[in-house]
Length: 172
Image 1: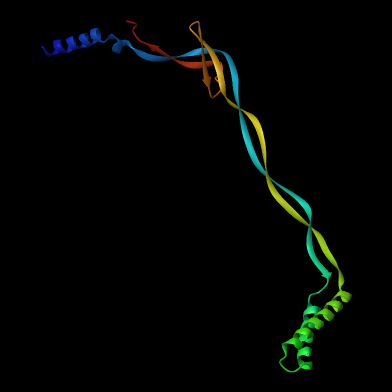
Image 2: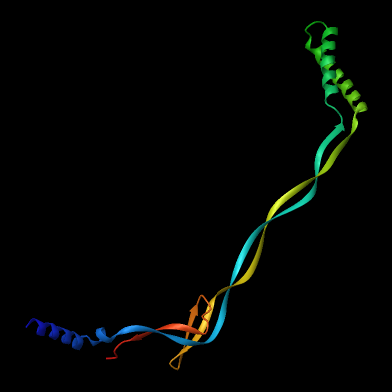
């Protein structure tokens, strides 16, 4: 009795779900009829250092010194204070003005002509060079299987044939 129930279940499964019993996928080879490479534009940026010699000021000098008028004002103030009655600010002030004027005149006569010195210095900056190139992105493949032509995109060159998956399922 047990074996007849087992056989009946198997037959019932085959009758109710025949697609499950016979359906499945198999693999085959299809002939490649055309392969076209596909490209995409890619932009690259590369840093580059650019250096050049530039003229720069390295020093300056000459001209009139501020020391003689200041020194003259101090000496004149002391002398004016000594000549006038002690602790008279007017005498010190007049002496400072006269001493400053004399010091200025001395500084002007002894002044060297002003000058500026220059030198060269290398100055570098970074610039970005940009270039574009075409990179291979894949292949557009046309292949033939059982008299029908199909198309696909692949990463690698397929060669003379491509592997295809064939699905078989009932049509009811």
